[in-house]
Length: 282
Image 1: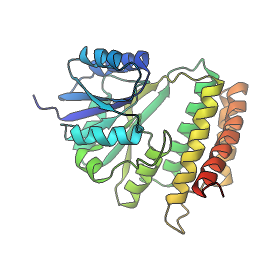
Image 2: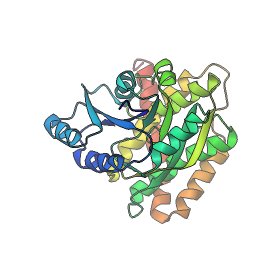
Image 3: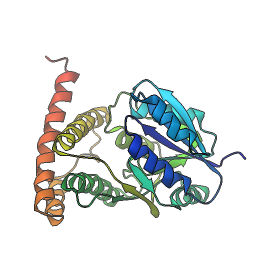
Image 4: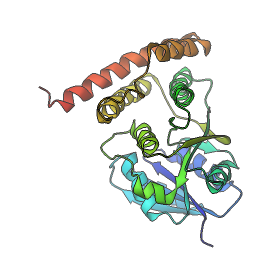
């Protein structure tokens, strides 16, 4: 049976997380679907292939470590579904996740994003990281309805749109989803929020991982703002954005609040590194 939707999952060197993700995707119900796993240069490729082979609805694509944007673009080209749903290997979608997203697309929406929950609330690092992501999503949606931002761990659109509007492969692991959403909105596509499409996010973060993640986000933020048309200001965040972010972090706890503050230092480092690189180190 030809699938109506394709779930796309980039992965690299996280077989345990991928196994959880595939188990959750195997429990999806609704219209016919397929799962397309993109192994983006894992060291143990045999293990990834074994996990994918164990899931009847899953197929495997191999890449050579070109990054998540290139992995998603390659998967979109190979997808057989009318709709494509994006998630990450460290996520566990709820059983009705894909059907909820596809239903909104079938009803006329062009781009749909869902609710992403913190799957590791006991971790201060994950709690802080999820606070930062959620704050950016909620703040931009409230400020610019229909022109917000959805992370690619919980995002869906028609395949034809994803073929036309590719992810920018110049980005590293951070910022390509924000850029894609901004370009989609600028092209006149409305971004619709579907709260019942739920994904649990379970990243494995420690202090080093948190720092590196936020530095990557800083580098991605520099590239994002650098690529915006001259004079465009709607994506520049006011001071209230950062004030509310820090307040929200401390509402989650003292340590998550400190990590949110710490993240701004890491983001600044990433911005400066990318600016230096962009200027050829001059």
